[in-house]
Length: 161
Image (tube, rainbow, N blue to C red):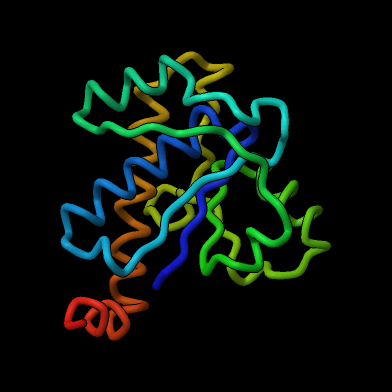
């Protein structure tokens, strides 16, 4: 099982969008049985809240459905996941602060896997949910290509059993 967690500030916009987009991609690829995918926020401000309505509408407009309840990232969550994919540099600093700098080998900015390494702008502030969707989809696609190569033997094994 490949454990992947997406992280943003509040866990109501970018990280749940990434979680649902990535779940859709691995299902389409036929490898969903090899993945455990979730998302968290570095803050507890939105804990218990659903995905932000404009984020949900954006996902639905692209044919991606799903529900989500915001929760805060813990040190245990970082320890128990193989990949911790953050949306921006601030999230990266927050995760490094939470872990005391440990586990850095598994923490990446999502779009660092793309040809255009960048932060995913926070649509809470930009109000541009389509741009966030496009950046997240680009990052998820590039990450999926990476992990399919990196963990190909494990995925082949999971698909046989």
